[in-house]
Structures are given as C-alpha cells and as structure tokens.
Image 1 (cartoon, rainbow, N blue to C red):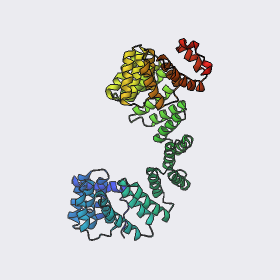
Image 2: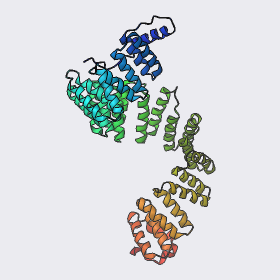
Image 3: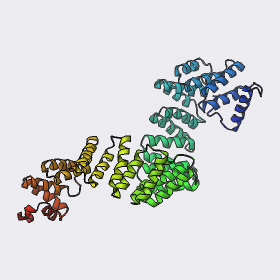
Image 4: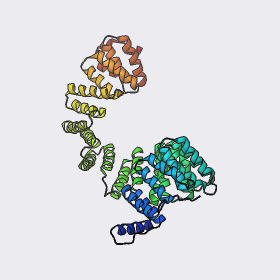
Length: 461
C-alpha cells in the first residue's frame, strides 16, 4: 500500500514553491513532476490558501492528465472549501481506491457527511490490512475522529495502536489528550508519565501533566510539573502563566506575581491585558490596593471595555472606603454587563458606605433578581430590614439566606432577634438555642439587640 502520512512543509517545499512562484512571474521554467505539484498544493492548503492550491492543481492536471494523486488533491481542496459531496464523487471515481491517502480522505469525507458506519468499515479494514506500521495507521485514523471531536472512537483506535507499539510518542500524546477529553484524568496522567519516561526532556508532556494536576486541584504536583517544563524551556510563556495560576491557588501571591511578570516579559510583543489582571488580583489579595489599581489600569489601557478591570478597581476603592469613586467604576462595568449580579452587590456596598440605604437596598434586590443563590446578599438585605424595624420581612430574608447557607455567622441569632421583635418568643428561643450552641457569646449579643428581654431567664435557653 502506498502510504504518505505527511507531506513536507520544510525548506525543500518552500524552495519548490519559490520556483513555482518564479514561474508565474516568468522567471523560471514551468515543468514540475507530480510529487512537486503535490507538495505545492499541500503548502498552500496548510496555509488556508485554497485559491492558490486550485491554480496549482489546474497546472498539474494539464501537465499530468488523469493523475490519481492530483485528483486526490482536488478532492482535498473541495473538502477544505466545504464542498464535501463533490469531494466524495471524485474519490468514488478514483481507480486506485486502495491508495492510503485516498482511503484516509474518504474516511474523513464520510465522517463529515455523518455516514459514520461506512467510515468505520473503511477504517477497520484499513487497520486490518496493516501489520508492520499499525500504530501509525491507528494514529492517522484517530486524528480524523479527533477532527470531528469524536473522542470516544478516537480513543479506541489509539488504544489499539498503543498495543502494537507503546513507544510511539506521537500516538501517546494523542492518547493522553483523548483520556483528558473523556475526563479520565488518571489514565491521562499515566500516559504523560510514560512519555516522560521515554523522553525526560519532553517539555510538552510536563506541561500537559501540570494541566491535568491543575484540573484535579492537586496544585503542588502541578507546580512541580510546570517547574520541570520551565527547566527544559525557560522561554515557555504558557508554563509561566499556569505556574502563576497555581501559586495563586496556593495563596503564594508574591511568587505568583513573579511568574506572571515572567510571562509578560516573554510575550512582550503580544497584548498582555489579561496577565495584568492576574497580577492586579494578586496585589488585591495582598491588600496592596494602589499596586492592584495600577495593574488594572494597565489592562484598561490596552482593553478599555474590560469588565474585570473596572470591577477590580471598584473593589479596591471600596476597600479603601473611597465609595463615590468606586461606584463610578462599578457603573462603567455595569454598562458593559448589566446582568452581572456581583457588580450590583458592589454597587450596593458603595451606597451603604455613603449611607444611602434606599439605593443600597435596590441594588441588593437587583443582584438577587439576577442570581437568587446569594446567601450573603440575602443576609445583607435582611440586616437592612432589621435596622428599619421591618421584622417580618427581615425574617423572610434571613430564613432564605439560612436555607442557602446555614453556616452564615450569627444567622440564628439574627433570626432569633427578629422573631422576638415580632412577639414570637417561642420561635426566638428555638433559634437562640442554636446560636448559643455555635457561639456562647450569642446570649450577650441577643440582650444587646433586645435589651427589653433582660427579664427573661437566658439560662433556661
């Protein structure tokens, strides 16, 4: 069987393309053999230049009429331009239907047409007729299924190829990827470790291993993997970025900043507004709000419609009790995304800081109308109702908050106070018992909020 797994796109192909382009300009002769023409077609196809590929093909068929290899390229061009039925018609007419590239292309076409049974029959037959190079055949077939995001079927072919040759690193990379896509992280990690055993300097495998450990939230192991990747390739910007993310998760914010700065330096020719946000978030966690705002502003310079940066600045200003200034940024963020529940909460907190409780309440209510599952916000609303002596409404919101999170600090105490204020002493006692069980100081706090209960025998509670 005539197998051509890959067509070169190296310097030799570039030289052939250069000679072809000189021919078009009249500076070189116009004869090319079939293999040269195939390489030129592939060169343009790989760069998405289908018009140029088609022109080369027309020249090729003039020089070599009815050539099977060139007609195969015609089918490939139709496939690239989305005319899949035409590609299939050409392939069906080819007499050398057992040619390796023809069969692979036909499998791909059938998959595109969702004729999966026919595609599988061809794929199984192709592999059954191969013995010596089965692992690479399985890899080629699996790549077609990967192109259709059929990770389950791709995995079956890759596992078959692995049994034939468990040292095929190219196949192992795809096998690990398929396991990951099928959320079988344990097997994916095992395969990446096997790649590393074959080639300890495989930086891509170390990076992939880090990604898998990160997904499993095994952050120390992820950090170790990224460090190995960086030891092999000190200019691996993505490993620096992911290392920063891991260190952030480990609360090592200073070290995370260093990793993000390394990423910025390596990618200095590309927009890094997102990395500036990551750095700003680290400074925010360190409560270094001016530094955090500096990096959020750097992000805004290159990406003005940046919701995360605007919100981040708003939060930093809130923490510094610069409420009016904070709210101006939150408003800008809400223009970008008016359905962001968290920004409505920050807006409410700004109003609270300005002692504008009416507008604070409106903002809190807007937040829970967008995202009802917000126990802290529900409790904040209940607290406002309690302060306004609207005890029945306070009870409603406290109970709703408790239903979502019964670990909220002093939630039972506030429910108890609200019930007592409405005259429902028995219910007040029930919740006060719960509050005291969690924190003995709840009894004293209850009397501070309900001094009229001084005559009650709290020891009986």
